[in-house]
Image (cartoon, rainbow, N blue to C red):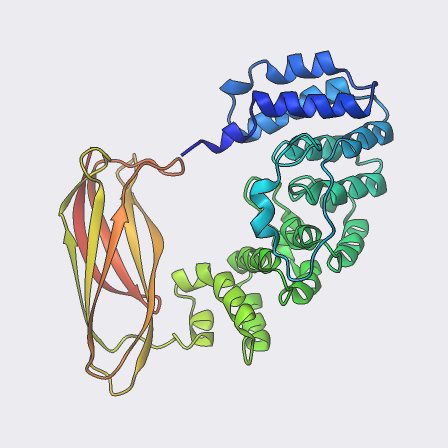
Length: 386
């Protein structure tokens, strides 16, 4: 799989330079290309975005309005939004081409606006409105939320009704308290109430692209204020249409994994499993080496002993060994199922230990827990080999 960082590469830099010079003779093409290309390949993803921003800063006019005008003029045209159109299908096409600039390089455009537009917030927000329709401005808008919260939230209320699903999504995604890769919005971590009216308006948006952002935003809030999500479920889950049920389900994933009683109860999962659980693992010794075979098979035998049908949320936790010899559990989604009285069932799951950039595996003893409705019901051990 191609590393994400290669989405910002030398060809993208050259294409961007071409369009910036095409729209303005005031753009310093030579400086931009020299500075942006130099050392780019040695950098990781976010560092590449900042590196290209610095080259833009060195090559654009000093006047913010003029510089932002050049950036906007270089953008790829966007088609008028279509009814029932989901932008998820066009994300892969959001790339710089002969018609203009789009895609991941606009992360660097947003960096420029975020760093130099704080004294010109109205002009900056207009630029971000344009950028987000060709990529996203979820990272760039966050410093403006910190510095100009009243203006930005008034703007977000307008954007929540924008014809573009990309703009409506920015309303939710840009204001998430704990957006990955983004500036953490500590005031909203402490008090997310300014975001709730926006999420209420967007939770039944016609675009799944927007609704998924709302779900992620609610999941962020739940990490610090689980009671807000419990209350939200009480108000908006009963008689909800299928699309909203799916959204709320996704919003609850962290609290379901942790077995939060209020959320589990809202989904009818608050009762402990009445039955027998047997967990077996194959093999008992697993290689963390893809060339040898690096998967673990979990086999869970369930037998219901209750007198009524039981709806069960079955998850599993891997207790990963850390460098200091301690273990750190991570919960993985399993399956939701219903068992009738006396019913038996076998659930199998293959868990891969293939290398990933977000986790380092250490050889030694590991463990697996089976959680049912948030409660540990079975436990087994295995050894991970180097």
